[in-house]
Image 1 (cartoon, helix red, strand yellow):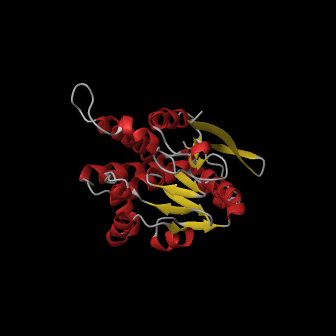
Image 2: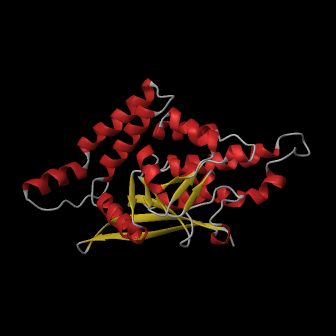
Image 3: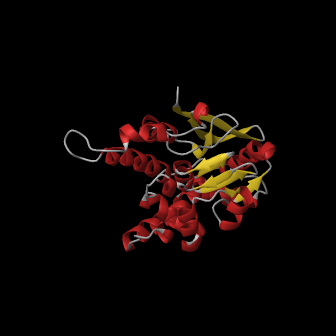
Length: 275
């Protein structure tokens, strides 16, 4: 059964537990992890379940199995769910699109870093999910395409905005105009992903990265995430920037700041608790 999975595991470093690491799994391997409507609807609840863990340090999004991150939205649903009108005259596509947007928003709004671990095909809706993560790490077998023009659709504005922010307007137009497939190295050169690893090394690299994040100060990382978001958002306001600055200043009053300075003076590794 196609579903969205959510799981937590402890981040154990040098026999000390430094919070937990969450995993969101796109689990539909029979269809190369294509996202159906029910899966999009499940994402906000899955993200909420993960973020209930007070000691959460980061979340990894991955595709189930070894074939794909996500082939995008499940096109077989489109005739019933994205074509025509409902009995009250509204567009069927509106409800489907809203489910997509709520899923992406839940990923983007998460208080901790979100890392997309991408292997195999990453297409359309799969790229949109990855775009709403904070960091994208790809295996060298990963491939990327934004194919709405091959279906007679337009890419959603939320996803297009993030695509432009990452790769620039000219490259975004090229991807949208041509539906061309990028290999992992081309995706790296364009800025779509931040790193490319041999496929056999991806999981170990993600494990090292998540543990590195887990042992650093959670409040500092949360402040950094909010600051970067406020500085790069198209609709940034003075209120957004003030909130980001307030969150950064609050780190001075945290126990973690005291622990960081004490550990530095004692020449030991700090143990941050997010307080």
